[in-house]
Every structure is written in structure tokens, then in C-alpha cells.
Length: 361
Image 1: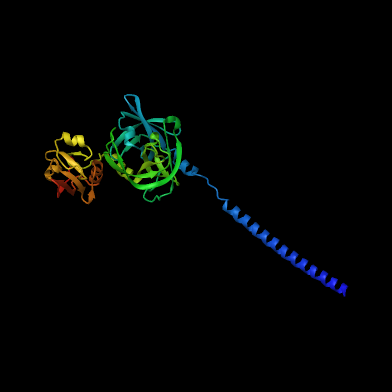
Image 2: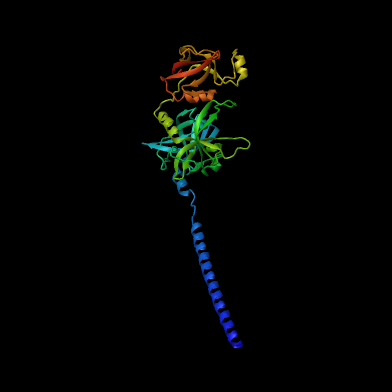
């Protein structure tokens, strides 16, 4: 009887051992498979490589030049530019007006190290565009892209000379940080904003020598012309570029020998914040009214023919409210000489409207 019990006990232990061993083997097998699957998945996720923008940069690189401006044989400024067009036996270069504005002679240096003297075809202050011409063909011409198709977050890069010729051909990379930014610009060495420009914002590093150089997309196509950056304590990585569509529109007029003419109202303007000038002009007006103050009206001008007077405060052009001289110019320059526009103004605290036929002077 005792032997019988021992036999049953041995059989029970054996069965349990086999069960536990089999179950353990199953767990080990399944866990190993899961682990192996995870390794495969992880390896697939990290096989992505980034070749950078080397091919795009190579496509554009030799079309970029260093632009040096001389006045009476003295170097007065330098920047960048790029060949955007070849026509017959001439090559055309785009750069910024402020790079060559005071020049009597301009030279460009290619990536090969060759320096050439170029002709200033024309320039425009408010668009900050200048066109240069080299009387020979070059081998590399920039491909033109579209700023309108660019999206926020798209990769972009610049090529230029951030300080001087020693750092020419420097490449910086960033993204499109903003589109259609309206940035106030001072055309003189004052704190007063003279004009507003519509620009592309980027965090690609831009320095003074980059002015006039290309802002390109990941395909190496130019979508803008770098022209300025914000400089202030606490501000970093905010640069701007003129949309290539706007630049080429102005360049076309300049190429054809035309001068970019903008309409003129024929008035002297003051900002409401310019209290000293308002007082000096003998005006007694409510400076809390948002608008542009008329301090003088020229005889036979568009403004005088429309009935505007000294002391009027222009508050809107068509449906666009204006609160500064820079804003007024921006909206006014959307129209052409000969166009008729409505101007709203405040006179003696009463708002009125007049129609103005725009003139060139």
C-alpha cells in the first residue's frame, strides 16, 4: 500500500515537472520571438540617412558672387549677388540696392576667384533691388523657384559672404519661418520707418555681407534675395528675404532701361509721434487720431487738386487704414501713376473722403 502511494506521488511530480518545463519553454520561445521582432523594427527605424543639401548647394554655388562697391577707388561696401539670367553675350546679376547705392564702380568676384568689373544697369530704393550686367556669358546661372509655393517649415539655405571676401561662399541652413511678413524699414540713419516691405522670414544665419545673395529651397532654386535681419537684444535667428517674384518684376523694368516710377501725392508728411515737428509747423491738431499728418501741400499736385490741406490727417487709402508714413507709402505704391484712388482724411475732427488722381510729381 505504501509502495502504491509512493508510485502515485512520483507520477504526479513527473507530470508537474513536464508541465512546468513545457510552459517555461513556451514562454522562453515566445519572449525570444518578441525580442527578435523588436530588434528588426528598431533597425528599420534608424536606417534613415540625411545627405544634407550638398547637391542643391552645388547646383547654385557657382552662380553666386561677392559684390564690392567702390567710390573714387575706395571700397565703401560689399555684399553678395547671383547670376539670374544670360542674354546673348551678357550675364545679369541681382543684388540689393543698398549694397551698391553709393558706388561709382562695382566689381564682382566669382567662386573661381575671377574678379570682373560690371555695369550698374539700374536700381530702386524702395524695393531694394539692383541689376548689374557683365559683358560676357558665364557657365552657371541660378535656377529660379517660387516663394509662393514655399511652405512654413521648408528647408532653405543661403550662399554668400557673411563678412567679407575671406568668408565668401559661406553656406547657412534654416527653414521658412514666416511668409508675407510686413517689416518697417528705415532708408536713412534714423529711428523713423520710411517704408514697409513684404518679405520672407527665415532662421538661416544672415549677416551684412549676405545682403543681395540668394535664399534657396532644398532643390537649389532661388526663392528670395536676402536683404536684412533683426538686430536687438534677445533677438536671434530672424532674417528676411525679398520674394523672388517681386524682385524679378522690378528687375524686368530696370533691364528694359525703365525707371521705376511711383505715384506722388505732393505733400509733406508727419507722423503723430513727431511732436516737435508738428509744433514747429504751427499745427494745432489732435495727435491722438491715428493717421498721417499733412504739413505742407505742393501747388498743382495731386493732393491740392483733390482738396487736401495743411493740417488734414490721412487715415486711410481706399479700405486700408494708415497710421504712419511707412504704411501710407506701402499702400500708395500699390497703385500706378494715373490711377484714381479714394483717400479718407480727418479735418477738424470730422472724417471726409476725396478722390485723388495720382501723378508722378
